[in-house]
Amino acid sequence: MQSFGNEPTPQLQRIHDALVSIRAPLSLAEVDLHALVAQTLASNGIDCLHEAKVAPRCRIDFLAGDVGIEVKRGKQSRDALLRQLKRYAASPMISAVYVVTERAISLPDVISGKMCRVVPLWALWGVAMPDRTTPLERTESPHLAKGKHVELDVIPLPAAPESVVLPSYLDPPRATQHAYGTLSYNRQRK
Image (cartoon, rainbow, N blue to C red; front, side, top):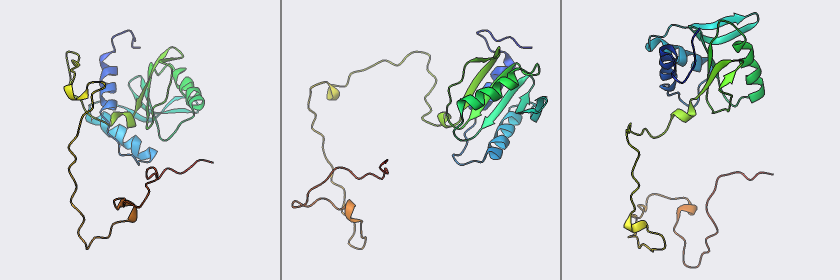
């Protein structure tokens, strides 16, 4: 079995790097996520078994060596997922568990003495920042000093051609017309 100190084993690091490289579209079925995880592991040279039986009536989605990978779609019940992961962690075939989910979920770092990591796919999207070896330096902008009023130049947008009919809420307010709040498509809760 692998040891989990401060340094991840090379196998764990390869599996982790492969899983965090996944960029899944927003609307995939769970079987599509399974195929995406299997493809990602295979393209990174990681052998795995799909739907591996780790105990009687207990199958984990992927088993890469002795690292189990469970794939979940949608919002998960934390308690039900913890019970499922405890069953997997009780198996001697598993030394660590990765949970690949669409949404982030808070799970303990160790379940039944086995390492547990969550890879939330939606959190992997976003702005890619360059690797930095030093922290960013904070610089003050003279335009954004506290208490200082800054005049911004407003550039008027060109008017729409006469042939284009805009919805009334996009018309500029007239001098005799009152503007009430902002346009919102959020449905009111009861």
